[in-house]
Image (tube, rainbow, N blue to C red; front, top):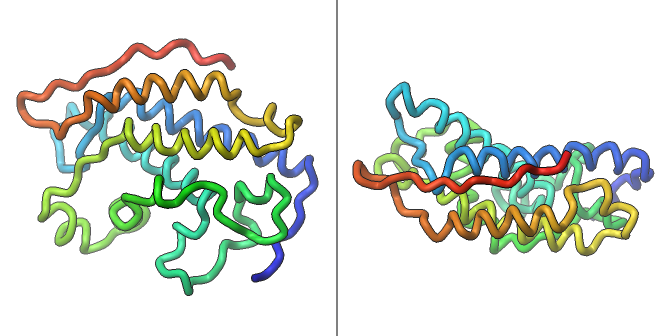
Length: 203
């Protein structure tokens, strides 16, 4: 396996700001969605929910690639991550790329996420919409991702922890998402969306 370029702390710290943004935007969009949402053609009044869902899935996918780069490859034989990709293992000083998160916890929707978000595919219609597989349990997904992010942050050297959202804040966010996850049911004409009031996140 090819060695990764070793990045200086100054470059890692600057890149950590992008990772922090991905985490914060995933949580912000998850809060806007509420319990969950389906990626189906909807009325005009639902467009903001659709935008929030797409925003959530995009940032979730980016964090998935950061923590588990093997999930970005269609097959194990595919090309490895590019040298330019920001990976969690870079912050842990690993000489080669490796998964830092548990891909069994955040890889459940890999095929559907890749084919419904990352590019246009016929499987959107034939595989997912035709089978009614369009509902996204966003709170559950956020909880799973936060657990892996939390584990990554716990493994960092102390001075690097300050580059990312603090763990107390993430623990509160996770508790909120866990409460929302308990209400997640596929939406019907009689299902109401439950939203919880979020505390003010520190800057």
